[in-house]
Image (cartoon, rainbow, N blue to C red):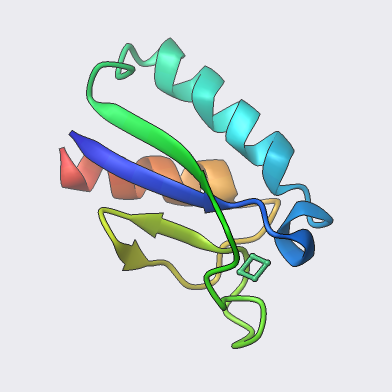
Length: 83
Ligand code: FES
Protein backbone atom coordinates (compact mmCIF):
# COMPACT_ATOMS: atom_id res chain seq x y z
CA UNK A 1 0.00 0.00 0.00
CA UNK A 2 1.36 3.41 -0.96
CA UNK A 3 0.35 6.24 1.30
CA UNK A 4 0.02 9.75 -0.14
CA UNK A 5 -0.51 12.75 2.12
CA UNK A 6 -1.62 15.98 0.50
CA UNK A 7 -1.57 19.16 2.53
CA UNK A 8 -4.87 20.95 2.79
CA UNK A 9 -3.47 23.66 5.05
CA UNK A 10 -4.39 27.21 4.07
CA UNK A 11 -1.25 28.04 2.02
CA UNK A 12 -1.62 24.88 -0.05
CA UNK A 13 -5.38 25.03 -0.22
CA UNK A 14 -5.27 28.44 -1.92
CA UNK A 15 -2.87 26.89 -4.44
CA UNK A 16 -5.56 24.36 -5.33
CA UNK A 17 -4.49 21.34 -3.28
CA UNK A 18 -8.13 20.36 -2.74
CA UNK A 19 -8.67 20.12 -6.45
CA UNK A 20 -5.40 18.27 -6.94
CA UNK A 21 -6.53 15.65 -4.44
CA UNK A 22 -9.71 15.23 -6.47
CA UNK A 23 -7.82 14.93 -9.77
CA UNK A 24 -5.39 12.48 -8.21
CA UNK A 25 -8.25 10.32 -6.95
CA UNK A 26 -9.69 10.23 -10.46
CA UNK A 27 -6.31 9.26 -11.93
CA UNK A 28 -5.81 6.52 -9.30
CA UNK A 29 -9.26 5.11 -10.09
CA UNK A 30 -8.64 5.34 -13.83
CA UNK A 31 -5.48 3.26 -13.43
CA UNK A 32 -7.31 0.85 -11.12
CA UNK A 33 -4.90 1.48 -8.24
CA UNK A 34 -7.51 2.37 -5.62
CA UNK A 35 -6.73 -0.79 -3.61
CA UNK A 36 -3.03 0.02 -3.57
CA UNK A 37 -3.00 3.73 -2.78
CA UNK A 38 -4.22 5.45 0.35
CA UNK A 39 -4.79 9.17 -0.13
CA UNK A 40 -5.08 11.39 2.96
CA UNK A 41 -5.48 15.08 3.62
CA UNK A 42 -2.89 16.55 5.94
CA UNK A 43 -2.23 19.63 8.02
CA UNK A 44 0.65 21.94 7.09
CA UNK A 45 3.89 20.01 6.59
CA UNK A 46 6.07 23.15 6.37
CA UNK A 47 6.68 22.96 2.61
CA UNK A 48 5.08 26.39 2.34
CA UNK A 49 7.45 27.89 4.92
CA UNK A 50 10.50 26.24 3.34
CA UNK A 51 9.50 27.18 -0.24
CA UNK A 52 9.37 23.56 -1.38
CA UNK A 53 6.10 23.85 -3.28
CA UNK A 54 2.84 22.16 -2.36
CA UNK A 55 2.98 19.89 0.67
CA UNK A 56 2.96 16.28 -0.51
CA UNK A 57 4.40 13.14 1.07
CA UNK A 58 4.61 9.70 -0.49
CA UNK A 59 5.20 6.95 2.06
CA UNK A 60 6.35 9.64 4.47
CA UNK A 61 8.91 11.19 2.12
CA UNK A 62 8.37 14.90 1.52
CA UNK A 63 8.40 15.82 -2.18
CA UNK A 64 9.89 19.05 -3.47
CA UNK A 65 8.87 21.22 -6.41
CA UNK A 66 5.25 20.09 -6.60
CA UNK A 67 3.03 22.74 -8.18
CA UNK A 68 -0.63 22.91 -9.17
CA UNK A 69 0.48 22.30 -12.76
CA UNK A 70 2.73 19.26 -12.30
CA UNK A 71 1.19 17.72 -9.16
CA UNK A 72 -0.74 14.82 -10.66
CA UNK A 73 2.15 13.78 -12.95
CA UNK A 74 4.80 14.06 -10.23
CA UNK A 75 2.73 12.23 -7.62
CA UNK A 76 1.65 9.44 -10.02
CA UNK A 77 5.29 8.88 -10.97
CA UNK A 78 6.20 8.59 -7.27
CA UNK A 79 3.32 6.18 -6.68
CA UNK A 80 4.39 3.96 -9.57
CA UNK A 81 7.94 3.84 -8.26
CA UNK A 82 6.69 2.93 -4.78
CA UNK A 83 4.40 0.09 -5.91
S1 FES B 1 0.05 24.87 4.23
FE1 FES B 1 0.71 23.18 3.07
S2 FES B 1 2.76 22.86 3.61
FE2 FES B 1 2.09 24.54 4.79
